[in-house]
Image (cartoon, rainbow, N blue to C red; front, side, top):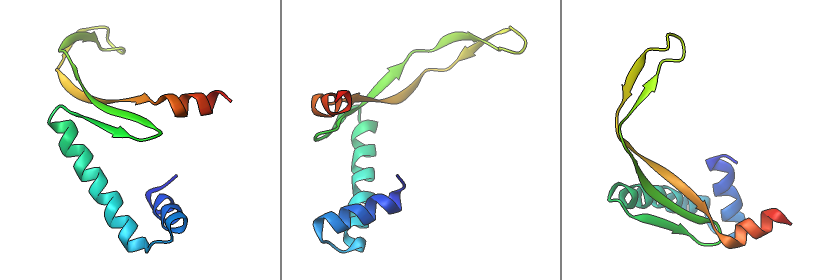
Length: 91
């Protein structure tokens, strides 16, 4: 589903203007990014949680040459599926 499709479907389901829904979707992304950058988590009701996760620096291997190389530490985002969605997918 694309962003445009999401906006259209939410606008139709809530009988709202597409411009209002688009502004909300954009704001949600900004707010979620700010929270995750601060090390927090974002709860998405009925879906799950987005959490910031820190990965340590480590040594990896170049698959082509086999030489070791250092992989820098980084922060990624992990999604944990909520119970309701998990059960719905099992059915």
